[in-house]
Image (tube, rainbow, N blue to C red; front, top):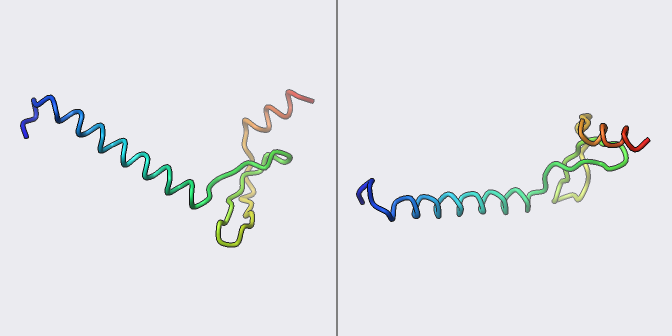
Length: 70
């Protein structure tokens, strides 16, 4: 396949979209980072045990938003 071909950019875009979709679904099924709405603390949700593991870190945007509402 020639680099100046019109099919090459389309094939590359499709490959990148498939990789991006795969990563999204893989990360979504494994749990992920969440923010506790009451304390603004960041935690991971363990899908096997269905428990929360807090990281002792706080989301600055959430804290700013909570301070504006007070």
